[in-house]
Length: 90
Image 1 (cartoon, rainbow, N blue to C red):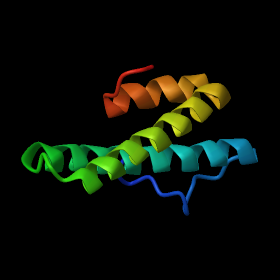
Image 2: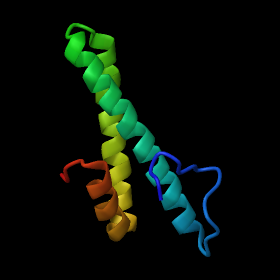
Image 3: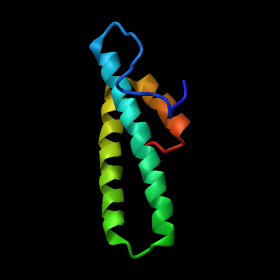
Image 4: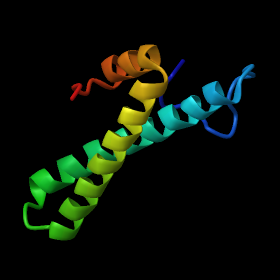
């Protein structure tokens, strides 16, 4: 399963609604992580761009909340996602 090709609108057929919801959370986490990496590289070049820095902080908080939700609901997928995205666990 490619992380960039996962779509929330087209989840695989699942038996429970909770699994589908956690797939949507995973998709949102992947998208947010890509945005975070792009903003971080932008801020390395433009150190005084404070509005982008604020946006980065908001995305980091949003990702942190989504990761906490996923860790609570499905620990196995959480661990797998953290290793695939190469982000550290808090």
